[in-house]
Image 1 (cartoon, rainbow, N blue to C red):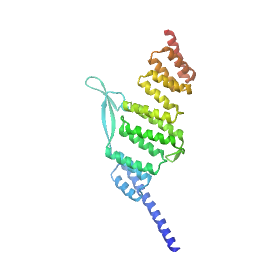
Image 2: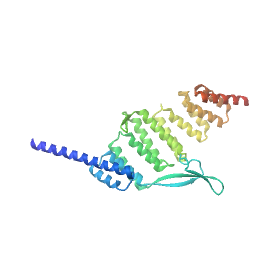
Image 3: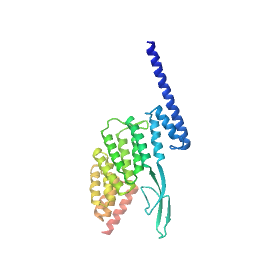
Length: 305
C-alpha cells in the first residue's frame, strides 16, 4: 500500500512540475512576443523548449504557427494601372510618363518552406483539437494570404471544411464559445465574399465553385444562390444571372439582393419592360429611400415610351 501511495505522489508531483514548466514557457513566450513580435529574436528558442516540455499544448502550437508564418513573410510595393488590386485599396496614386494613373500597392509574400512549417503546426493543432473551428479559420486565412489571386489550395480546403460542417451534428468551439451551424454557414459566406473581391479570374472561378458546392450542402442558405447569380452578372451573362435570381425570388420574393441585381441585369440587357417588373418589386419591398428611387426610375422609363 505504501508503494502505491509513494508512486501516486511521484506521479502527481511530476504532473504538477510538467504543468508549471509549460506555464513558465508560456509566460516567457507572451513577454517576448509582446515586445518583439511573433518572430522576434529568441522566440524560436522558447518555442522549441516549450515543445519538448509540452508537445500537445495548443498555445505552443499556435505560437509555432505564427512564428513560421511571420518568419517567412515579406512585403514589397508593386505598381498597377488598376484602381484596385486583389481587393486592396492603393497606398498611393501617381502619374507615369504617359500621364496615366499608376497605383501603388503593398503586397505580402511567403517563403514556401516557412509556410509549410507553419501549416504543420496548425495541422497538428487541428488534429488534437478537432472541434475548434477557429483553428480551421486560421488555416483558411493563411492559405488565402499565401495564394492570393490563385486560390487552388484555399478552394480545396474550404470545400473540405464545408463537407465537415454539413456532416457535423454538434456545435463548434470558436475561441471558447459554442457556435451553431448558422454561424458556420455565415463564416463560409464570408470566404465566398473574400474570394469574390480578389477579382482575379482564378479567384472568381473559385468563388463560383465554392458557392455551388455550398448551395448543394446548404440549400436553405439563399446567399449561396445569390452568389451564383452575382458570378453570372459580373461575367456579363445576364440571362443566366436573371435565371438564377429568379430561383431566389421564387422562394424569397422580398430578397433585395436578388431584386436589385435583376434591375441591373435588365438594364444592361436594355430590356425596359423587364426592368420595370423588378423596379416594381423594389417599390414593394425596399426601404423607403430606395423605393422612391425605383418609382422615379419607373416614371422616367414610362416617359421614354
